[in-house]
Length: 250
Image (cartoon, rainbow, N blue to C red; front, side, top):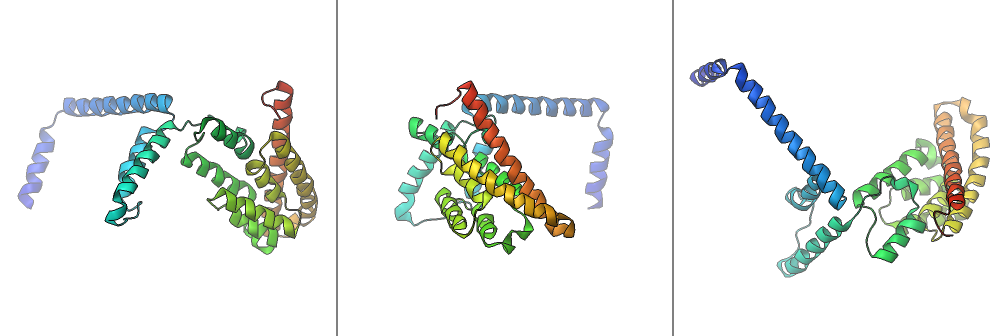
């Protein structure tokens, strides 16, 4: 053991500064080539090559895919091939939150037969919704408790059903927001739902404003209510601007 350490120490001492310069230059060159290739691949196919390789090859090795019986192996291979093809056909929008999932994303899918976003991007926007519209005190109110779970649902139909369930309890602003984003099939329907959310959110904002100084819990609740109200206003403004510019048809 001691002899191995001494040999390694002697080897490192014999290395000249030129070796380290060459090593640094080589690693920088390789990193630059990887970066250029990744940029080119993203521009051409709309997805990350490293991410695609990780999902297609590394995920099965890490146990991300269930092992089926031998009778289903052929169908599984066919499904994986179709999944890879669909991933390569996905295009990532520059700013996903500028579009409505129901009125614009789904319409794109109906017309072209392709998904406009990768699952990764859809998951990112869902995480944004959870950050914007949920707080720790939501479980104290039945409608907000339902919506707290709804934002975490992966199935769009389950989220929409939860929103309708919350509206049966009371006028829930977050339920209207979800329906405007995901169920409305036209911009006119989305605008109507956002206005209803704005009205419901305004009443909730006035109530939370009176209680925000009663503790950190009420302050956090007031902050989330403000975010919901701001979101409604921004989305209605976005619709109005697009109407004026004629960017989309109603």
